[in-house]
Length: 104
Image 1 (cartoon, rainbow, N blue to C red):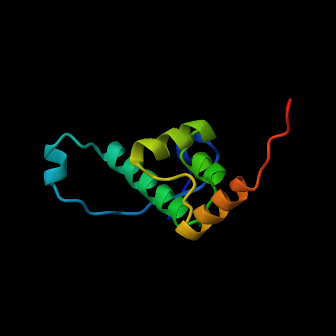
Image 2: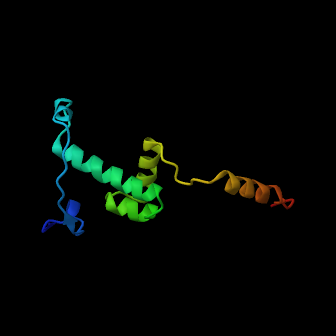
């Protein structure tokens, strides 16, 4: 179902989904708004980690600046740049070939 209210007032259409959570979560002071925000955050971070969306798109979906999104990645322990061991070796080899010009 598509709701008429945009997400966070950003003009972005939204779809309403029903999720089920253990009632026990509510005993820890978790509110419905908290659950909605955390589910959105989890989904966006998952899409970003799986390289389905860019950091800019992820930031917009969460109504954050890019800097705020990068800070969120840090808080959640998500790497912004996730090099494979082979890519790291390639980068280090490239750095090793660089020379510094005197006076530069």
